[in-house]
Amino acid sequence: MADVTFLGDADFELYRDLIYTESGITFTPTNRSILESRLKERLREKNIDSVKTYYDSIKKDKEEMKGFLDSITTNLTRFFRNQAHFDALEKYVIPEIKKIKKTPGAIRIWSAGCSTGEEPYTIAMLLSEVLSPPWHFEILASDISLKCLMTAKEGFYADNRIVGIPDNYLAKYFNKVDGGYKIHPDIQAKIKFDYHNLKNDSGQRNLDVIFCRNVIIYFDDAAQTAVMNRFWDSMAAKSFLFIGHSESLFGMDTKFEFLKTEWATLYQKNT
Image (cartoon, rainbow, N blue to C red; front, side, top):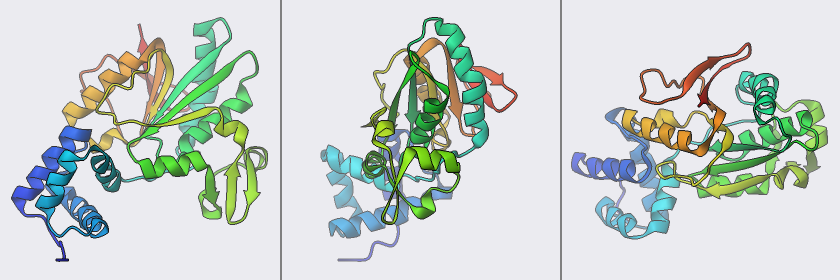
């Protein structure tokens, strides 16, 4: 097949607009090369020699559209990434939620854009340490990448992927297997992994905490605002939102309040 080395301006605009419509992810001239390289690889996998042919294909085939969106996303994560957030979760957010709820029960958390699972597994291990019955937790973990979700559900991590996990957590919550470590089934059972495109309403309601870190950075202002407003609708009257340390809601038309704790900054819904 012909070597697809670049997108013409007209084709770039077609793909850029389609990706934005389907996912809210924004490609600009600055990161155009990323789209081109991912698209080139996808066409080679599918043995298609025309960017226009593939464009027509993904417009008609919803499953192939999912695969394409999967291929253009960047998935960078690790266990206990930005430790300060988890310190704030343990030492501020969880105690506050207990005060709010008064009656012991479930604490509901959504890891939105969970990638290969390190974030929700970190949350699950931490909450297993700090919550005791009748308090318990439920975690929904979602991503737009089916490939990442498969890795997350499997719960296997090579030796070089467990950097940052405290030794006591590694011993307690992982089983050593050939080539790496596998998360303990008890932790896996507390997390529901599911495909979700943040462009759409998740259908979730009364969530106590949302983690959506290093995700909205790929959206433009309008898409960011829309995502945050959908988060607001998904959350309990008094609840908490973590976003990436390089992300901000400053200047955005949302109802979230900025919250500075001793450990980290985050946002809260307080109605």
